[in-house]
Image (cartoon, helix red, strand yellow):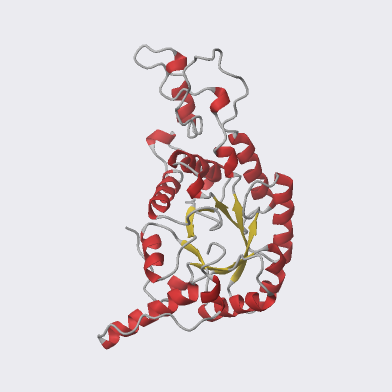
Length: 327
């Protein structure tokens, strides 16, 4: 269990990316988002590209930064489109980019050649994590128990291996176009991936020097889950640590640990605390104000020694929107 900022504290507020990504949001909603973020001193507001410049203007004089989604929400746009969108977001003043992984590549095996015979056994092995690291590559060519090379424990048909190089090229291109201090967060869409595919995506993100891996867009399947967050945190730590199994050299450049952002379905203080305890360091949510109000209420109750009232405040932009549009 990881340390969690104190309930209702400024440090807790700085874990929140205050988010509105609905297509039908209007300027009044964006202005309210920025006002709330400024009042609570959240880490960022996260919006679509057309609203970046307005948010930058609204947040002048505060230390709340603007994050912009790229390739949202499908992630299947071509690399050129993502690069163009990323460049425009940074030019408009975005300091952070939440980029959607083309997760369809990880879930689609490239079968370039048919089986040699109709009755040939089908390969049911999930090859997603194969050939990701040098250690696995070495294992691929090492026979076991007298088996031939083709029967080794990490063997996989070439036509079953996803096109990792395409994903890496895209991520590396985005990193090259938007170097530090621009923060890049890669949205994996974990609900669409197996555990092995999540690990593969984490490897690719680390190799491309991405700053965060993020659970979900909130628009495609369930949002953040504790098992996925824990898996991502474990992968991020491993990829940033020198161990005998990775040859004493971490995958991530410089050994700086990738961080994990949990997003989608985080509605209250309890949800937030669970994700932070699991190792997430950033939360994508449209319920940030409620999380902070709930936290302050808990602190006040402890001071007064009573349970108080946990009812949500009256309807506002936050509470009319957060059940729609993923966050």
